Length: 107
Length: 119
Image (cartoon, rainbow over all chains, first blue to last red; front, top):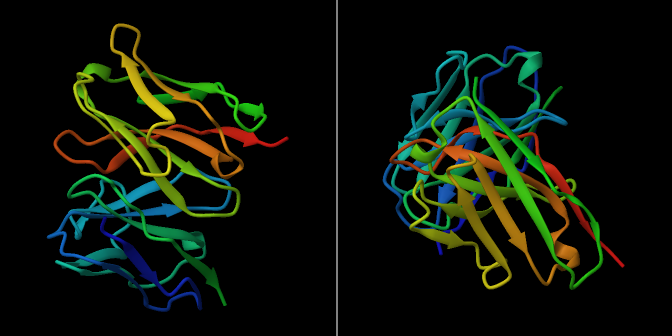
């Protein structure tokens, strides 16, 4: 099975910073990659699918890129409400594995 | 609006069984694949199982294969997970999630139901 590895596992940044989270697949998955945001005590929320397509209603400061095995989630200007754990997920074929998550905090 | 409401969680001893339910509303349930995803306390998300819109295809994570069974009743807009031979490492919040037609990522999630396996 394909493994999904995120880095870093945790991240602390200041408001206004540009933040980048990486997700690597152990084999190529084309662009079948989604990103989710899970705020503390809340349900995961879809941010991006097809590696770079922003889900409706998601702020434009979020963006995604990549194809094959290497993907990134970027927040162009970190806001306090972005404190959350972020997960990538592959969906090219079952099992639809998630990355282990990246916990983002405000410095 | 789309709603997914899980039920059936609780505390159970190792080796016992539990059946989770997910009531769907606000969309044409029979047109969507459905999934179970779980999250152990303080841990990440783990995909568990999928069932196609018509129930013709099911797939399970290795960690639950042979012990869990996903099913659905499109006449009742219900998704189920029968969990047998439960183990301590099955302790988690279980979410049902709707996938986007033609893809297997999730645009709507339920609030989750907690399953605790302990003696």
